[in-house]
View 1: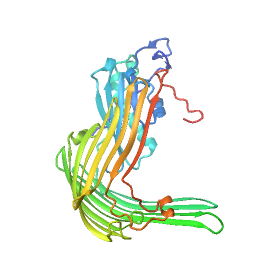
View 2 (view 1 turned 180 degrees about the vertical axis):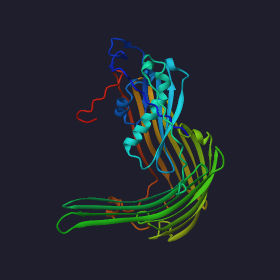
View 3 (view 1 turned 90 degrees about the vertical axis):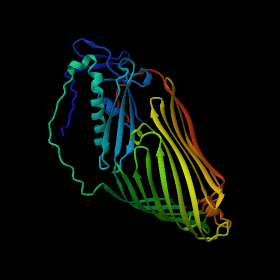
View 4 (view 1 turned 30 degrees about the horizontal axis):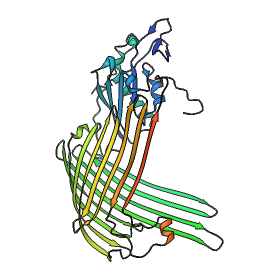
Length: 416
């Protein structure tokens, strides 16, 4: 397979006239009507992009752009990233759109990834720059290389081992946290398999005075296995097996098996832009508790079912992700839970952006709550789960910006 190495070489120095969108070639000739570009990407290194791609005008408003570039990110099975880069032609480039991709490896440094994204951006922009006055200054170099046969001795398996420690203290306070995990996963077009083991320990000690101190700890560990098989471009089936223990949740042993099936209204191949997935699960749980629960149980066998609806789309007007999940136990339908998650960002009008995110859960399925009254230390230090019928968090805000629409200049002084 041949590799196309695209280099854009500007043979004549130029400067950008900020308020007029012109390029001065140095010989007195004004190069008018360079493509104006709006890059819609929250995690991109914009300063680096502007330095590496100086042959377009960058604007802050998508309405003012000739090319709206939308970049989305999905994690690959190897732990890297699939960057889908969508070029949306507007104004004089209306109906000139394209979609390219860049796949990063997990082992890549941030610099390698950003250079890979820039390379794809250059290739995507060439069709627009070719219709601009500086097209005469563009040179395309082609490098012919032999295709190398890829031999994957790991057969798509990715393994990860991690251990983290957190320590914080002063004369009257000591806090420690340790976390370790081991995981293995394999992702292909047809199968998705994952296995993980984790352990977590937290402890706190507070000295009230010379004779009084408060100490507490919590520990949890567990493992899970899940397998997903593709049926076609809309259907998948699979399930997971899990086991865990948590002093916080009063769970000595919690083990379960949950087969599931999923339907995506949109093809999975379009998931970088839009998806509407419905997942149904029917499963079995065995719970064994450290202490007697509020339902007079030390252990129990449970059957449960759940259904979730996930909507996600990234468009020129912004993005939205909404997830609704409901579950209940089959032996008692009053033991149920309903959760809603939301993340929304909208470009309302020129310069005005609205963002809202959060979740809310209606909770009636806390089967493992201890029967005894919790101590103040356990409540204040959050070492035991407490009874509640709901929980929530939220964030809402508006951002308005105005002024010059051009943003070509990079000035790194005093940091970014």
